[in-house]
Image (cartoon, rainbow, N blue to C red; front, side, top):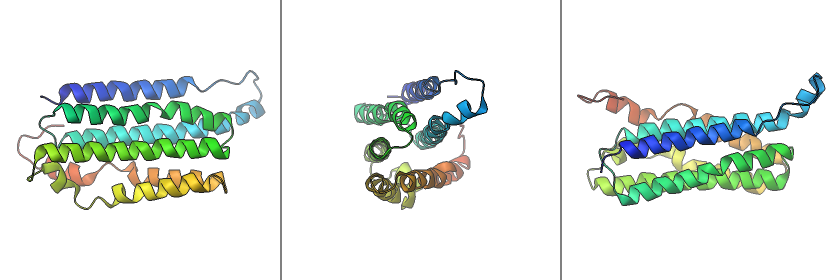
Length: 197
């Protein structure tokens, strides 16, 4: 099967996720600056989640540049990733509305952790489909970011019950770590004959 419909469907779902998140932001009923400041937690939660969805879109796009075709397993593992990402607007809104209370912050972390796990499963499914000479496996190498992210997420989930601010810092650190698109895939593919983005 060709990969075009998977990419188009994923792009559409991620666009809808971002749209839902921004619709959850509510304008203050007052024209005072203090009223705008009251919405700061919800806005900060939105910014963090927007960055995360952007990161997933970037890396999903780069990963699929190393894919020639897909099968049913790839379709379902891709849907599994989209399922967890589709929960981001809900957990973002819950966290922002409750001013980063411990339980919503921890649940937000669970959503990020499961999204990361789902992305890893998708990667491994593609590698399995590509076989022993997998282009994606060769391009990913050791994948230290992929291995370290779950550790940060687990720490943040537990620390949410100690101090939610620490958890938010850890979530932001993981986002910063992934902010630059995956050069391991981008650079080698750019030099392949006939490769087009």
